[in-house]
Length: 122
Ligand SMILES: [Zn+2]
Image (cartoon, rainbow, N blue to C red; front, side):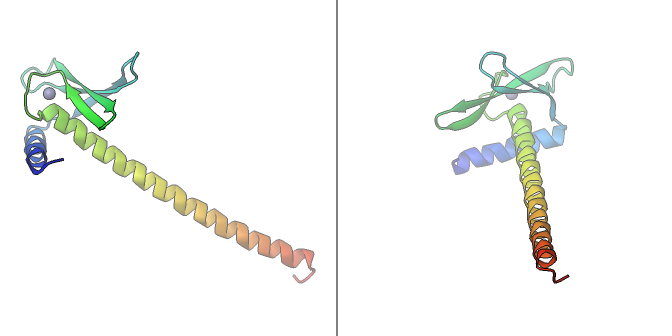
């Protein structure tokens, strides 16, 4: 991502945050299985914009159905949602790793106890 794109994203995130624009629905395209997000329109609260997460050979990108030519608040809201989602997954993975390491330590202690029991040294 270039510096220009990054600052454009930062501006879009600022606009989305200031306006309280956030993802209000999730789903998948039936045929392509692309993830999609619903983001309420700022102009009409009864209208949602559909933002698709499209996987390509050069990575994934967000495609919004609005006419904006720059990074829109809808894509910025989805980007923030994906960043939070990734952080939650990373946290959950760290929790699982810690749990497995605790289990492994307990298994080693149990194995040590069984060795002592089997050797008649307990
Ligand atoms: Zn948009």
